[in-house]
Every structure is written in C-alpha cells, then in structure tokens.
Amino acid sequence: MTVLVAYDGSEPAQKAVRRAFEEYPDEEVVLFRVVEVADSYTEATIKAVHDLLRERRETTVEKLEEELPEFVDDADVDYRTEVATGNPAREIVSYAESNDIDHIIIGNHGRSGASRALLGSVAEQVVRRAPISVTVVR
Image (tube, rainbow, N blue to C red):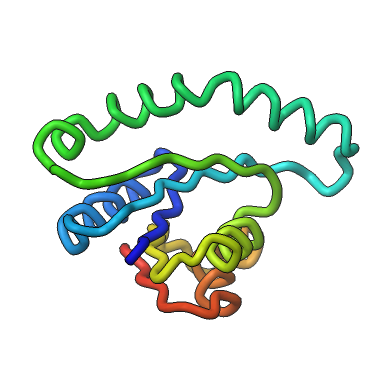
C-alpha cells in the first residue's frame, strides 16, 4: 500500500504526516509538495521551476527532516518526497492516479465563510476529485 500525504509545511500538513506515520508505519508514504503556479505562466517558466526544484531536492528533504525530527528519528517509516508544480488539488489527484496511490491524507486549515469562498479548499477539491479514499486531518 502507498499513502500520499499532501505536504506544504503548514501545521495541518504536519498533522497529516503524523497521522500517516502513526496509522501506516509499515507502508510506503509519499510526502507530496505542490508549488502553486498561476495558469498565466509560460511553459518555459514552469520548466525553469521544475529544474530549480530538481536541483533543490536534497534541500527539500533536509528541510522536511528539520520540520519533523521526532518522526524521522523515531519512526521507522519508508517515505519519500515528490514535488510538482501547478494547481495543488489537480496535481495531488493526478499524481495519485498516475502512481498507484492507495490512500491520500491531507490537512485542512478549517477555514469557513468568506475566506473559504475566496481561497477555496484544496482538501475539498481533492475529496471530490480523487478516485480513492481521502482522509482529511483537521
């Protein structure tokens, strides 16, 4: 089984990682970051961002380990990080479909009212679009 955790460094995302590590310690966990890119960016700009992210992959892993030291040190969990650019909800679902992901875990900021309407909810969009089970961690 492979579990994808949408990870952006926020507190809800860290709770989602903790949940994945606690509930799926014997499974592979993919910590998936999406760098949001506006639709107006050109293909060349997106390629440049991809190249930059590829170069900084080791830095991303080190930063993750700094953010979650108790889990990296104490948990014996098989995990890897992946990075994509684009619309977060779309990229999460697309990656899950393309990579035989069995379950998605995503944090939720718990916004409501006007802020939710203006900012949208990545978690809600993932729940609606994903063809697999999604756990939303508050």
